[in-house]
Image (cartoon, rainbow over all chains, first blue to last red; front, side):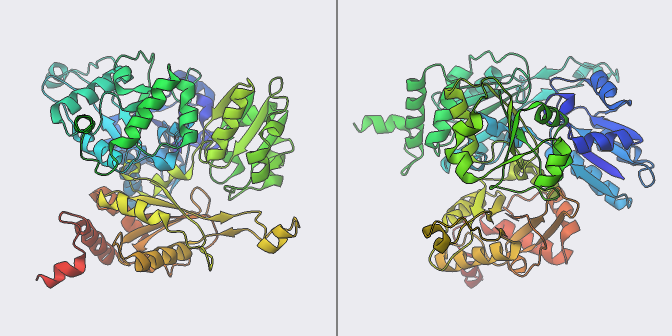
Length: 300
Length: 300
């Protein structure tokens, strides 16, 4: 049997009771170790907590070594642990499909992930549109496919959750070409970097998906003991020191309810100013919508 | 201290280890008992599992009795348990804001909810648009506000998660007016009822948000031992016997990836037919998009 088990967001004790009971009875336990990290736990603390040794599964093993992971799973119980919930990444559906081909039964044990726990900032989950990912820009690669998705969400009034890049166990191009298994230190995109990327792409595309004044919420270390939220304009986010990883950014949509706003006001520097930003943004995409605010000013 | 603790979807052991440790140390433990139910547990099994008596919190208590729930929380630990994750319903942010007013600290312990665990059907979570709720129609009340939201999602290619009505501890109008605390048996909307409501509203509004052939996925008893998925057309869903509650329905958007489709094919009656439905639907909102398929046929 293959068990796919979500670990939740932060502590080793964020696993469910049923998840823990299952891990304890499994013959081999893999931890998917490249799409996210547990913020208040590490491999050693997990080994100790489970009372058994965990096998770290990197991208190479998960994407190309499914048969190795599944070896013997027709007779023995194998656990595959995922930070957050089980089906956050495409590669895990791959693993299940392979298990199915091999006639190996599987079961999922779910847990919290950023996709639902983000409701803790006070924005209603059913008001979010599609989720987008922001990756680190390089000198030659500045991908902006997120931009049209944010625009689509905001045109219909929805909030956007932006997941920020994580680089774990990455090789430099030099080490890769020389075949040296030397890994770069892990890098986690912070709020300021994400906001700067967003501002740069708006500047380049000028399609008015958002402005430097668009209200945002920074979500830092969600579910960990040092969890923080910060609400403010995109411009403010570009200068915000959010501290240790992990971070996510939310860009608000027009449909902000009074209770959502009241809740967010716990996390602002200047309540009056933030309410004004939100009120302005609520007019931004209203019909005729395609007239940017600057042109409206001219008509006064 | 106020602890808001998610219980997950089904078993009493779906609570996290940290959640369970917290419940055990709390002086009073409330269970929010009207927005959802645990499918494989009840109050008696939870009492036994926690080793303490749970207080059921109905809508009246949660929405108007916050001070009663929070009584003594400045000195003692109080737990407020929520099926799924903590911030699925607006009323829980209300409770936190009231705690804050009273100077009572709070902490959330997150868990899986339908909003993220639905990824188990193989559709990618980041491809979902806004979530909508379907309520039971009555002779005089057939609310269709969900319709324009589904249309908005589908116009930009996104999947829609439709949450289906749950009626727990509801009074008949007669009993309510007579002040009799007699409750109707609980009712849970099933897949066929939801699909029939959708078809009726499309028939009435004729804005072509979807057709009887639009591909859907029925999600039944997610996270429970009898969890099932079924993929097919909306028309097929209107005749589908999904079994015991709880159910949710997903209407697909145009952006279906190959791997999503391959995964869904595990849950179809006729793979060829389903792939054809999806291929047809992928053309449905493509530019010029606003010409309904019937008019396109005429131009042939």
